[in-house]
Image 1 (tube, one colour):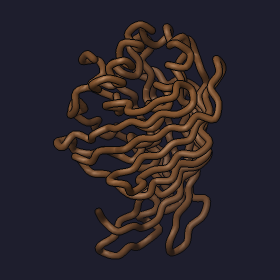
Image 2 (tube, rainbow, N blue to C red):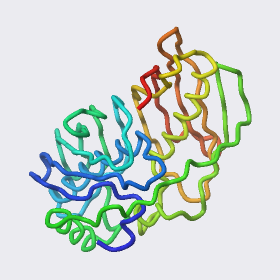
Image 3 (tube, rainbow, N blue to C red):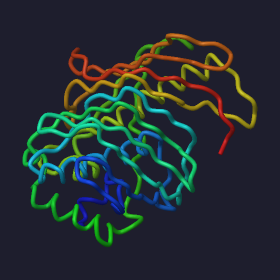
Image 4 (spheres, rainbow, N blue to C red):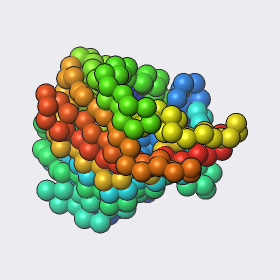
Length: 280
């Protein structure tokens, strides 16, 4: 597995697989990585599902981000943690893959994904099928080298409109080039939906902090993300308008709807729930 798989690949080894049905694997978060947000744990589960769906279709087709009904974030992960990944496919066709999955650390669940659907597109549009097949064989054998991920810095956001605790709008400038584009994807660089979601959650967390107070030993965190819908590819260099807007709030929970637009066109939507949890 060469250097192009060092920037945004989150499966080290596939330990058990029934192509197009289920897969189990592992990923070790590098000990030196400065941060590993919850959205990247979801990315790891999605990548495991992608590998088994591609294997089922002999790497003719590959899935891209589409819909995710519910993702539950149960606790934070730390640098050095080893994620045990699971993906269970409900269906896998040339048109789409439907799956659920989860990740755990030392037997404790850290994330659960339910009712995810990824459209299947020609694999050769995004990568060389023979290279994907070789990488899959590596993951099924000795696995990829550990500690190859150096982290992804949070994308800078320019707040352009704000109503404290209620609504915030910001501009996100997708970089023209970045290491993660080499993995996502070599032939058709696409801004990862999970990095977009991480940016949107950061906006919502800012609103929640303005609306809620927490104990000194606690912090606010996203606990559920619902109804994620990715409507279009986001290319390098695009400028996005992203927003978070309160839908409900009380002393224990804050909910917001999330959106992203490119040139006025809606490209992604979701909902997030935020609550206090004990600091790791």
